[in-house]
Amino acid sequence: MDVLHTAVWVDDIEAQLSFYCDGLGLERTREFDLDGVTNTYIGGESDAEIQFKHDDTERNPEPAGIDHLAVGVDDVDGTVDELVDRYDGEIVDEPRTLEDKGVRIAFVADPEGYVVELIETLEA
Image 1 (cartoon, rainbow, N blue to C red):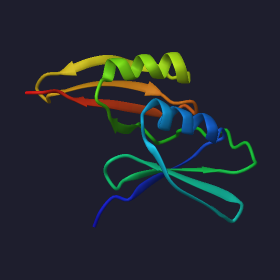
Image 2: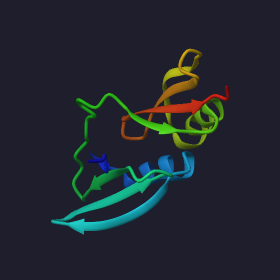
Image 3: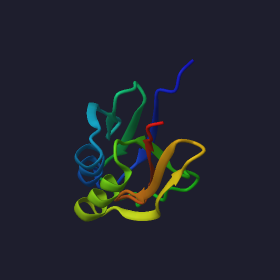
């Protein structure tokens, strides 16, 4: 058993790919069309992926029921600054350190309104 991917609907695939690939450094792993829907996958170092589903209709997806997606980063503060300045990310929760967990985290909304938790593992 394993987690393979999470699928979310998006209206502006180019803005999403710019945010996640250019802004977060993830890579497009594959893409295919099925029943008029384009399915674009992105991933990082692990095998888990995020699947963006999009077509020619404006679905105006609401991230209902999805609290957040989590992405590991090397520098939370720098990543937040870049996502806000260059990719229209919106800060949901400012960067903070969880000493007992050994991480620094922040929450940023992507162009479609999905909240992304950025997690930086701190050196011990």
